[in-house]
Length: 343
Image (cartoon, rainbow, N blue to C red):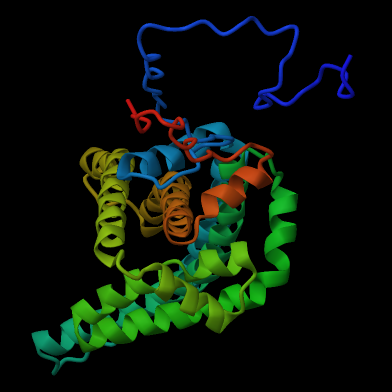
């Protein structure tokens, strides 16, 4: 027996007793058959496949998250929307019925233009409580829903308290980013509508970057601008379609409450009292926001994740975090044979 104990390397040409004697072939050996490598399936630990997403996959991912995590998505939205709108309802009813803040100051010598300006002033005053409370509640809701969406992409469940624990240390920065974002968009819209729309899309991912990356205020604004590079029009189209969908949902949901107000007017012959009409409108708003806000927040978060997968290869990192093997490139061509062909 040789020194190697019979375990010679495959390319060793020495005489081995276990090898048959080579036979003379009349024709050259045929080349190996071509090797085909089909498309590899992207890992999908959660609501989306971990690869660059299309429009349908972004919308479907947001809706799937609402169905898969109803307590976290819809429950949080219902709770915050109910508290916010009922608080605004109570404050507004008190100011209207118990004070003269919202009472128009019409004088005998006022013309129609001055009356219209006075009514506009009252309308703006009425909207101030809801605007302030709505901004604060919207920031909390968006932060919580962003955390839930980030976990849903990885297929990892999360409770409401855990989501709030993630948002709470960043709440001050989230307020600052939201206010800065609102001021920029408002200033651009005042100057001209197009700059406002451009800024709205350009910095639309700032709060998402702040929550998921833990970036500071300035860095999160920069991150949104960088991720929007070469993708402004695509993001504009996705957000515009989402806005149209939420608008249609709002119309469908608010229609029954408008009909109820109309039925009260037709039955009694009088317009419903302000408190009753406003309460019905508030209930319709709560139901509408409970459905549309999670959809909008989910789409925005998935746009952020899609941009990072396209620009930074984040799909590989997400697959590792989810404990899955990221897709590998196809193996090299067979030595001496034709190049691999895909299906």
